[in-house]
Each structure stands twice: as C-alpha cells, then as structure tokens.
Length: 325
Image (cartoon, rainbow, N blue to C red; front, side, top):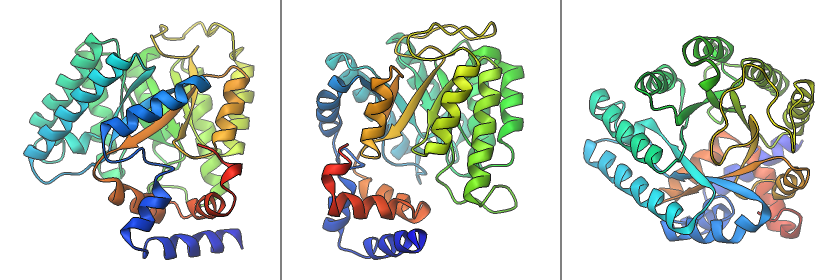
C-alpha cells in the first residue's frame, strides 16, 4: 500500500507546474546558483557534517557544455577554499564530455582532479547508468596510475557486477581505493541488476563487507536502516568506529577531510534527523549537496527513478517538522 501511494504521489508531482516541482525540490536541491550551495554549507556546518558538491547536469551534447562544467567546478573549489568549508567535489564524467570525445573528456577530468589535488581536495566520480560503468572505473584507474590518488568512484549495490568491480579495483589500487557505495538510483535492466528491495539491500551490504575487508575507504551512502545497521555492525567487527583510528592492517592512508576509514553520506533534505543522530554518535557524516540550472531535470529524474521518494514528499508537505534537512 505504501509503495502504491508513493508511486501515485510521484506520478502526480511530475505532472505539476514547474513552480510546484521547485517547491518540492527545494529540500533536496540547494538552488540554481553556487551562492545557494554556499548558504546551505554555512547553515549546516555547525551540525558537525561535511559536504560533497554536485553541479547538476550530466550527459551533454557538445564539448562547449563540458567547458561550462569545468569552469563552474573551478568556482566551486574557490568557494570552498574561501569559506574554509569541509567539502569535496562530486562530478559526473559525462558532463565533462567522456561519451562525446573520450580523450578531451579525460583531459577535462584530469585538469580538475589536479586542481583539486593542489587544494588538498577529493573528487568523487559519480556513477551514472550502466553505459558508463566500465568507463568511469577506468578513469579512476588511469588517474591513480598517473599519481592522482585524490579521486574515487561510486559503485551501485544493485548491479550484479559490483562485487567483481571491487575485486578488480582492489587488485589495481589496493587500499588506495576509495568508494561511495549506494543501492543505486538508476532502474537498470533486470538482466544486469537486482530488482527486489531485499536483494538490493543484501547485495549492497555484501559490497560494504568486501570494501572494508580490502582496506578501502568506504563512504556508506544510504538512508535505509537495514543498510546503516549492517554497516555499523560490520564496522564494529573490524574494530572501527567513532573516536578510533582505523585498525585494519591493510588500510589506506588517512586523508584530510576524511573519516577513520569510513563515513556515512546522505542526500540533502533526506532523513536529516538520522544524519544528526549518526553525527551525535561520533560518526563522520557528509551531505550530498546538488545545485545548478538543471535542478528541474534532476528533480524529475530522481522522482521517476526512485518512486519511494513520494512518501518523503508527502511527509515533508504534511509534517515538515518531522524531517528537517
């Protein structure tokens, strides 16, 4: 019944006027401008959280658009440094032209990662749909081979291939591997991904276990209690947790603005009380903070590809006091 209601809410929302979608999305998207993201970082920094900034927009149609994203992320780096925020970058490889001209797209990403490195800042390559999974992982491998180790990727628990990808990256990068693990927002074909909720949760938890065992840095990106509870139990089994140095003998080196081998990540505006609870327990938490002119396209895609957001939309509308960002 809850699933049906959630889908119905999403179906109605995506047909609403743009102003209504903006009203709904303002919990989850900072706004159209960098200054909007800066204001949120100022407001939420006091809650003991940190941030990863995403300039909205992904697959592009020309390399001129790729230049826009590069320039905008340079502005993001400058804003983070100016405000002395505890923040890093999340980028989508297709926004930098990877599918249009791989060589030029790779050079755009390389330049940004180098600039971020000079500012002691980490860059996360967001994982898009299955068409670019292999390419995205390959970009990370190539950059690490060039000595640019301030970059990591995202793996989606729902994909059948993810455990094999962890093994591959473990062999190539060793403990320098740095992941964000999530269930996955894209509704991928059933011949390459799990479809049932429990199957996706179980697969995601298996990925967390494998990453921790490999000594990698693990950013657990989930709002689901079964994933978070499993992660906390797994961390305890490795002797990891709040206020502890990473005890794994194969662990990678500590980085600036990173936790002791792990952190929890959540989307802006989603389960703020849970994030604050984790922070109060001493866990490092990070907010995924998107902004940009493409807020409408992002919001509609999020709603369509994850209908469970519908219940959160209804809750935010009817009981806003129960889920502050």
